[in-house]
Image (cartoon, rainbow, N blue to C red; front, side, top):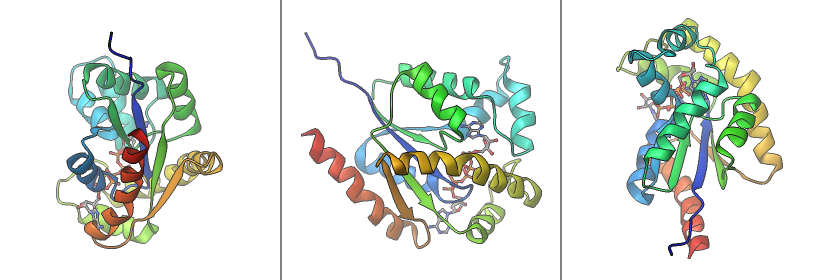
Length: 194
Ligand code: AP5
């Protein structure tokens, strides 16, 4: 009978506008991962008629964080529905509470964690010049997103750094230059799997 394979989970962290989504698209194209963006899942749920929809809308438009249980359940639902066992989980965990909820509800840990390290003024510039018009891409909400990032996300980054699982990427430069730092991390992971 076929051996059960444990899913390969990687978390992708970085401040708002650090380029997580952009780099994830390249990782998917090159290494065949399934991309799960916590923000996209929440935005999709928000416009659906679900029980969570309107509370997610209020939370996101203030730049705050949605309850962990909601986010983790949305991620788990996507993981269970996928036949790909390589997951790139983008914009998650956003807090220590998120991290603990994932470990508890999904019962798994990431193989490694990427952190896109980007100066604040660069993140602000990118987000405010983005032309897709997200409800949270205005200067007031952006200030709050940065505050939330520093207060809640930096401790998670620190946690994975201490565990030796963190790869810090310099997120300033062209998209291709940044991907050249990302590529070897995934190549090493593929080598390991052979
Ligand atoms: P989320 O959707 O995760 O957004 P974010 O983390 O704020 O990040 P962005 O999507 O804005 O940016 P990105 O880093 O992906 O950069 P991108 O590639 O788009 O979260 C949104 C909200 O959802 C949160 O505030 C929260 O309310 C909620 N939420 C999410 N996760 C949650 C969780 N776990 N729990 C609870 N709530 C949660 O790039 C940005 C721009 O820069 C683009 O225009 C791009 O073209 C450009 N760009 C990219 N790379 C470069 C480059 N190298 N040089 C110049 N420009 C570049």
